[in-house]
Image (cartoon, chains in turn purple, yellow):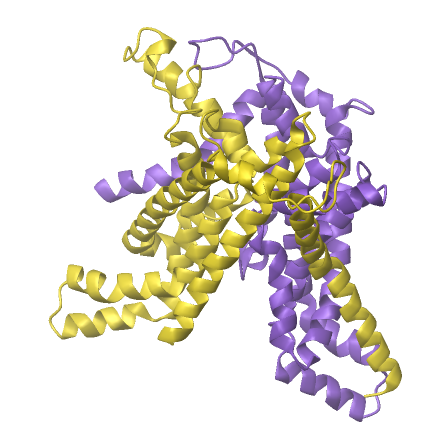
Length: 253
Length: 284
């Protein structure tokens, strides 16, 4: 019995953010000392469907950036990690991939901001995308290192030796083998972009208003109902995907 | 290997350098040059003035000490809680609701965790309202300062909230991979009690194997920005917040100081990693 009560504590703590933000996102007028908002309505959620509304644009921007970063880093990470696994000084190359993670994202943003200003990419979606790639691309390279083991490299060599063209080997041998890892990399790099704040704020100069930027904006404006709604929009998609297949998404974290 | 293949490989590696290594190296070089007055809008040639100012005022050292305090306390509490959860609820982590639910907090970024802690712990937050309704306080001013406080209670709680699920899963995986259940059976056969097994077998193995991850998480907290920005104190600032503040002031002379703080923080992190891995190599 004691064990069950004790177990319910972490479970309640885990569900609390979803329930609490769910309540706030449906609420209006939450005066002290009421525990619940005075009024519950779908008005806040309807803002999401207002054409050209801030939340709608934020969601759209976050999606575009997330998908773009995930696609590019997965594609480039897959190819580059193979090159690195063949490289003479493999460990030195890999060490470089860890560099961006040594710095806090916001410190990294401060240090690279000048280059984005010089190239007129500050305040632009393309600048934020490139900025996020500084984190997501090396992450993908590191992730794919486990794929390019001797067995896979030998299989590729065998296929080429038997006369299969490189394209055929890629399509029929390497890609099917790498499919689970490719999907996992795509999702995890999508999350890097989806959750990113520091680089987006500094390189985007506050003009590229993704969902994380909007959460901070609404908190600053003391608009807790919209902040809760934007928070839910960030938390729900990965949580739902996780519900479908946790091991696929988080294996290797 | 054909020449074409070699050339393609060169281009891919160049792309890697361009996107992964160059921004960090270039950024650090630029930051260092700016902090020494060699570049930037108000550059006047080599000077140690900006470094003297941040070191002389004590702002950087104070901020570093505060950040280390927050990171150490948060990681210690989170490690203790995660060890308890992973060892006490091992069966629930293998199967049952907790095995699914524990992954959920991994989908909550720092910004949202900071916002959640703020809405729960501020004087007009949910806990204060519950305390009022329960009759424990008669006015919201009676509720203690749990956010924006100098001890960093809110920041520590937010980081603990983020770290515990991650570390619990990490310890759980290590327990399985290191076959600790077999070692437990052996130690029980040899007459050792549960506490002896925990103290002399399980905890040393779990902590030693998780040490690199614990260090990386410590560094992550050390450089955290969103959480202290939302719920940190005005008097004590964590390093990332202090650095950003220098950039956002109207005084252009503060910018080289911001770069100096960023470079100093990076240096500290690199030193930590160097010392750790040197130590690990010595003991391998």
